[in-house]
Structures are given as structure tokens and as C-alpha cells.
Length: 375
Ligand code: SAH
Ligand code: SF4
Image 1 (cartoon, protein in one colour):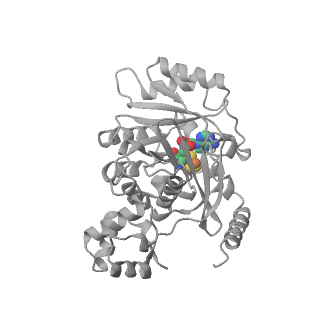
Image 2 (cartoon, rainbow, N blue to C red):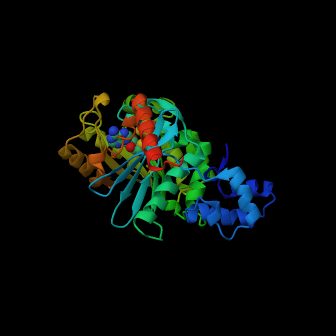
Image 3 (cartoon, rainbow, N blue to C red):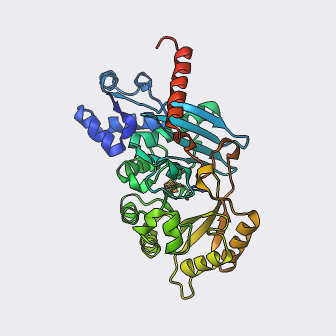
């Protein structure tokens, strides 16, 4: 199979091009064509020598992921379901707002962490995505929407690794993908606008601080270990005290001077005033031994298999008031893309029934074949 150029960060592409006898600056030109301009046809890369283009034709391609389905929400949110082979599919969500446009990117097909309130977690783990499969989500959406919106300028300003999967359990593919997101010759995103969200894979948080510090969000969901053990099973391996130590170690390298803690509000489980008070004691104790942070409360998005309910609005507001009063910066996440099941934690309801995905992938391929009969 041909090499997928989306699999390379810039040093990797330089190494590969040098192996073909091409100079470093040629690799940089190629990298810009692919990521900055969204060109996948080598013939359009007019400033590359004919010979180099011929070699590229033979050996390489820019291979995006086949789209199984696209859904457009009334609020402008767009969700794509991409086929990653063997009956697996991953989802990517585009969320436009007044002052930014965020892409929520998946890192794995399924997830091995198995959080109780997460539909991806309920599917189990299928496999890690390759760097190319992580980047293909950004490459495809950015350049597709530029064409659709007839815009030459960058569309996506923020990336959050909050789609399917635990990004820090796919570290080796994640880091090259992040460096491409940040690179000026590619997407040129600011480190502050690329966020890795983790359930708390402590050793990898330390490595990320060293290898590619970007904004960090930590899925906390409970103020003490007994409850967190039952909601986020990785807590048994890396309990809260170790997790918070890792957050403190991350901050000196971080592009922002706080950690975002995500807290999914589950009716009667973790949403009571005593939970809020315990959170204050944990994160903002008197004497200043806490963690500089912002709290992001996420109203739970229910799915049938979870057996859990969303906290009533009044409980979320009362919870937020306790945190705010104690001086913790707290926001309640707006739900976007409700009508297309694109909200947090609803992703990949679709891989639950693998046969269904296979059927839809097959149907989509048939549609494509009908549309392009020369294939
Ligand atoms: N695996 C990473 C990133 C993906 S999940 C992590 O857990 O951080 C992104 C966010 O959505 C996490 O904070 C996660 O806890 C939250 N989430 C998962 N399921 C949810 C649901 N059903 N409703 C609301 N938020 C959910
Ligand atoms: Fe995995 Fe994150 Fe879902 Fe937990 S919340 S199962 S870590 S994707």
C-alpha cells in the first residue's frame, strides 16, 4: 500500500523525502501543499519538480477517511462518521461559535477506560487510530468547509481531543498529530487552542508536558476516590491525589496557567451540595495547596445503556453557585448538536452495532460507486 502522507509530522516527512534523494525544503513545500492548502493531487503541486511528483505518484498518497455519514444540526454543528475499517467508525464534530470554531477529534475506535457515563466507554476498545487517521479528521473538515464556505482563510481555530477514545492511551500517534496541528506550515493553531482531554493517565501527562505541552483538560467527575473509582475505572490505578500532583507538575510547561477540570453532572450520583463542598476542599483548600483550575460542568447526555440520569438544571446551578462562591472559576457547558447526537459522550453510539456500521459503510460505498461509475 502507498505511504499516506498524513501519517508524517514535518521531521518525519523530511526524513522520508531525504530517503528519496529530495532536499529538506522540498519536504516543507510538500507539507504545506497537503496541510496548509489541502491539496491531495500531486499534479497540482506546481512548484515541485516533475521527477519528484512522479516519485510521489508511485509511492505516496494523501488518504482521507471515507465518510459514512454527515449530519448537520440546526445550530450549525456538523458531525461526520468516518469509516476506519473492519467495521469500526469514529466521529468528529465541528462546533461553530461567534468567536471561534472548534473541532472535536477522536483518538481511538472505542475506549478501554470504560467510564460508566460514556457511550464510547460502553462500546469497549477496538483499536488506536494512526497519526494519519487523527489528522485526516482535521485535514478533511478544514478543507471541505473552506470549499463549502468559499473561504480561503482558516476555519477551525480550536481543536479539542474530546471525541472518542482516551488520547493519552494512544500517545505515540497523538504527539506527531498535535505537532502538525501547531505547525505554521500546516494548521498554525496556538498551543492554547489545542486541548488534550484525559481521564488521568498520569505518566503520559508528564510525558506530554515534556514532548508537546498543549492545554490540558482532566475529566475529574468526582471529589473522592471511592466515587471516582466507580465512575472512571482508571482511578484505581491513578487515584485523585496522584492525578492532582500530575496536574501541578504539568502547569509550568502548560500554555495556560490553569487546568480545566471536566465534571459530568449525574443525577443523585455526584451532583449534591456535599460533592461541591468536597471539590472546593480538594481543589481550593485554605492555605493555597490546591490546583489553579477552571471547572467545566457538563450536563450528562443520557444514553439508554448507562442507567444514569442528567442532573436537573436547578441542581447544576446550585452546584455551580457553591463552587463560584468559594472562588473556583466555573462554567456550565452548553450542549451543542443535540438534534444529531453530537453532544459530549454521545459519540459512537454507532459502533455499538458493528453490523449496522458495516451495512452503512457498504451502502455509502454503493452510493459512491453509483455516483462515480468510472470506478
Ligand atoms: N477520553 C477523554 C476524552 C474524551 S471524552 C476523557 O475522558 O477526558 C470528553 C469529555 O466528555 C470527558 O470529560 C468525558 O468525561 C465527557 N463525557 C463522556 N460521556 C459523557 C456523557 N454521556 N455526557 C456528558 N459528558 C460526557
Ligand atoms: Fe474513554 Fe473518555 Fe469515555 Fe472515559 S469518558 S470511556 S476515558 S472516552
